[in-house]
Amino acid sequence: MRFPLMSKALAMGAVLMGLSWALWSVQDVVREREDRHGQAERSVVNSLAASQTLLGPMLLRRCTESWQTTTGEGNSLKFVPEQRELQLILPPQTVQANSNVAMEPRHRGIFKVNGYALKAQVDVVWGDLQALVPKPQHANSVIQCEAPVVSVGITDGRGIRTARLSLRGQELPVRSGTQHPLHVQGFHAALPVAWMADGAVPARLQGQLTLELAGTRALAVAPVADRTEWTLSAAWPHPSFGGRFLPAERQITPQGFTAAWRVTSLATTAQRDLLKGLPLCQVSMGDQSQAMAMRRYTSVDSGMEEETLKPGSCVETFGVDFVDPVNPYVLSDRATKYGLLFIVLTFVGVILVEVLNRLRVHPIQYLLVGMAMTLFFLLLVSLSEHMAFALAYTIAAGACTGLLTFYASHILDGWRRGLVFGLGTSALYGTLYALLQLEQSALVLGSFMLFAVLAVIMVMTRRLDWYALFDQMRGQDTPAV
Image (cartoon, rainbow, N blue to C red; front, side):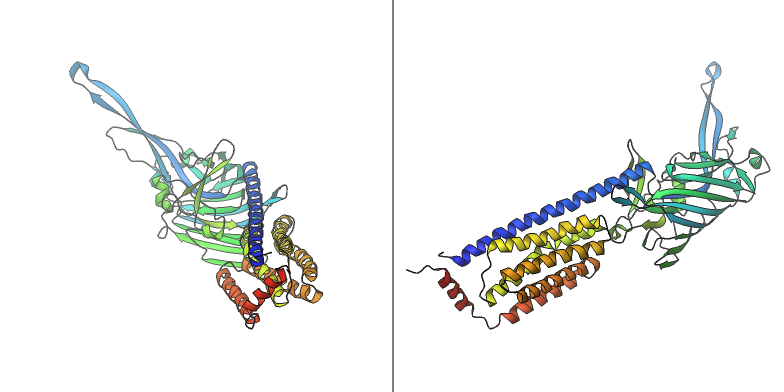
């Protein structure tokens, strides 16, 4: 062969291109499995309930003001009846809630979706109920009002399991729907008519709500009261708090968490936004990079559609997302992005041994080594669907390291070199795992790793005569005349 180095370089380039295509295919598999997990989550949402946001309790009252206007003069004088409808809303003065969440994971095939059941005991107080007595705006008008209702809005009414409401020690019948023109999903209970009779309007109203609610993934509360105090506990050790307010107090242990929010109307625009008729927001963080995202779900033909709303365009909320800290698809996708770099580093190690020990490794042998490292990522994503990510990573890395150690001991002409190669491969897999776990420090760790690899190569080849080496290789490949 006249140009052996050029031929081998072209062959190695072709090998790397083939392995790049293989890694891209593995990434496509990871994305496809992640999409199927998303489909499973949507299936659970369609069958159970979406992420939930609570609004209220609040007092609503519908009224109608009727009057007559005159048109024309003399014999053509006519009286035209007119009317306007009023929707009066009285947010609570204080809301104090103690709640507990029991996790109820749901499965679609091998995919798990975090469902939950909320049990809440809510004490609520309304101030001056004269705000529910409308004032006429037209002379000689007649105002007719329905009985006020206590209304509780919920993102997805399918999740309501039980709801009991008592005011002044009297339990009121609860009915479906909120009677609010915008926040229609939820429930309401009508106050006795006698409570709002002339001269009998109470100056203060106190009640208690007992609620059991099912949902998936996230839970949020809209702090529309003058003062909202909400305590939440759950046997979930990985909460992700979000919305517009973080807990004033929180305690997180391996067994679960307890969080307490204290929000006043001085700190939030939720009450004003409710009175302005803005839509209800929902905390749904997804991953931590979207922790402040606020979303609203609206009913569509076959499920729940997600619409992103900017802060300030909807009623503010606070809440928690019951996230899985180790998402196998996110970690597997991140791992495959390092795939080509790790294959190149492995090839550099083989080339180094080949040069220093005057060995000859065929491009096909490089290809087989690269394929083994590529299959690691496919093993990782397939195993992580059935077991913990750390265990799946250990099994996949151990299998590939064992195979590469065995193969390297033959292509590098000795078990000692094979074991050294295996130890180097183990170090690469260990470094990759550290990069996956230390997301915030991945760049600095990866930079130091590449610097260390370059330093090792430079130290090991510092006395190497590259001209003599290339001349020797050309001599070996030039046929005798």
